[in-house]
Length: 272
Length: 79
Picture 1 (tube, helix red, strand yellow):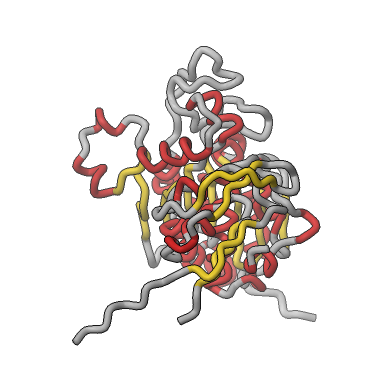
Picture 2 (tube, one colour):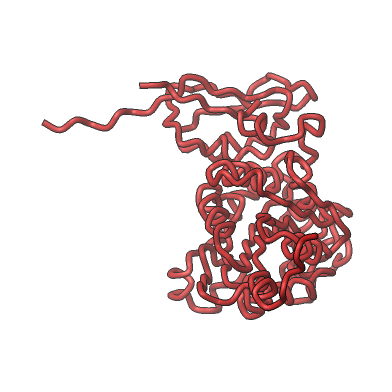
């Protein structure tokens, strides 16, 4: 067994439930390395929403909350506020985070509460069979958009930034090395860190939207569609369709963090 | 006289047959074409790739990091 898996995972839950070639697995892989490199395993509190990505934290031998659809972020806020020493990381999918969970997402970003939200975006509601999501590309065919999706998708990083998130980054499952550095930075950043990971979904989005369930082909599509911030600035908007701007998109230091504000402003009860 | 940097080599490349689901992402991401499909089956019945050319490995760990099932371990040759 991979030594990292041996060190951090719950053996009885293995092998992983993810489909062959799923991007979720790569994110788990990279997250374990990030935690190991930072040495913060003992302080971790993880929250998973509903969806394939929500299963990710359940594999770690850590304090894990696997909660209701769309409510990973409010539970995470509760965890953080009750004990600010916790390093709280949220694993959520695109449907969980900006579909049903959209409201919690914008307010947590607005408050700049010290969470690290890793949203794994496959552009579909995968676990339930492949329904259209707020992030499904235009014209994408899914179980609930059989004639092609007519709804323009969210740019979730843009949403995070304008709501007040102080660390915003996007990578794909084809960029594990860069993603590792970003996850570490996000976790160390004292504020709302939002990391979007575009991921291949061979079974649902792959088959319905891209027309292939070949994980390698889907991974190459992710790579081909990624452009850096600098490249994006030089590309005319007409050519940016279907492309993902990757990298660290926003990083603001010095903005007041919510948990700190609460503890600074309200007298704590003396312990009895 | 300048010394050239030590060339990294892999001592062993293990694909755990208990976890591999035969997605072949390792075959795809390896920059040196170390992996290829094989007739070997995992314990669950998936057709597994194998590290057929480990001598070419540059120990970049891309396969190990990408594997969605944490099935690959790359052990570097110690200097």
